Image (cartoon, rainbow, N blue to C red; front, top):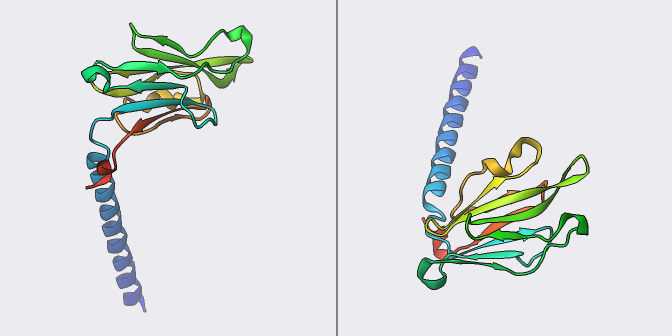
Length: 161
């Protein structure tokens, strides 16, 4: 009886390790090969709206790029007008929903036309997870407490391995 249990336990350990290796390899392959082509556009969304508040066009004018403000963010008048697009610093500033001492916090998004990338560089939220996501060239960036997200325009061929 004791020998049967040790064989089953050894088999379970081998199976668990093999499963862990297979899942890990698939994860690494997906991260390396999926979404590795350059994005042509990035869309910045605020709230539950399906229309982007700002469009970043990386392919405009032979890679020179442009930023298009599609509409103004609806915020109380004491905060001013958002989004703020600073073309010199290549940043977009939105007003997030997260409040500290009843004051809504800003979310600053930096874009780079040469790298075709976007990064949330400044925000206030629990654990600052949004700004720790890093620079992205195809993976969505999501900042839940502030209700801001960045999505990329990708091709179907990006998903083939």
